[in-house]
Image (tube, rainbow, N blue to C red):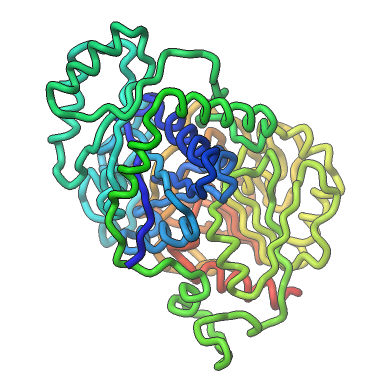
Length: 492
């Protein structure tokens, strides 16, 4: 049994102020000298970047769709190790989960648009993957952030509906956002007092703290680091002044101990090595360290490539690799000794001119791929490996061209590997997430990486390169890390 004080910050819908409250609360708690662990429900990469600034620890995602229900408590305990308190930011509305026919705001598909033959690989439950679902798996109390800007006494009806909708997600209290005046506050408090709902904070309307957005949500913190740090500090001050931090900490401390062991990347590799054969030294059972030479795996980072899950690098290091970060915008060469390359998601289209101008790096990436080294690219990485992005030259590893598109593609996907690659074996089922507003035109004969049940194919496999729009969480598929590290060791 492991005890970690924790609470979930949820909302009735997107745009209610979850990120403001969650990030501000993390910063406020950290300013009190507490070790705070920040977590995000679902696949979103951007909010965890702000959580990391607030806490000084890696932001962590908790996604039962990508990783499975059984891993939620272990992954949470792994991420929160050594923390005094954990704050978990929800996704969308409290009860919004994966549903086959559901749509997200703006018309983007929420459900799995392409399910492999044989049926859905997660339960046919519209609440699966929701904030409420995760809160239940973590036995964490829920605080609802309500945008009260245009609300009066009806706020009580709204909150009562959320309180009574699903008893599996008991609502512990609310934080009222965008309240207009003292009179407005009294009206709202009286209404909520009438249904016995605690109010943990009241945030007044303010434009003093604002975080810029664009087509895929907030601008990542890494793209505006100095201003993001100031914004997080301001959020911490705002929440300290507006919320009862002591009461929220007491609520978090009421969460029961979890009957789970923290996730361990070395154990994950040992218990799920896929079909990769490896000898585990008797001196270190459960560890892959020392089974092969330590290969250097370069991991793209910097303002253009900000999307990634912390567990990916942890798995690779547990598999015996050394992970070296580099910035394709400014670095002219890959890390010394690079034997494998990972390029995650981000916004290369925003930085396309700078990426195109860095010819030495583009040529090094192309040469590494041509030499047969393992290269895995997701979304932004796919665009960087293309011949062109919005007409500007990229690495030319793939015979494809990329461009911005008018339509947002967003949703969970279930697929099977269409071919063997450096991470997957043909026929293996994967769960991923798409999140982009670009299209790729393919004029090459490369094999596809993934196939959906509709017959549609996605991504590319060429030699040691696998690239696609699918974002994958390797904690849910640890064999990906084992295979990739082994391929890098062979190439070293």
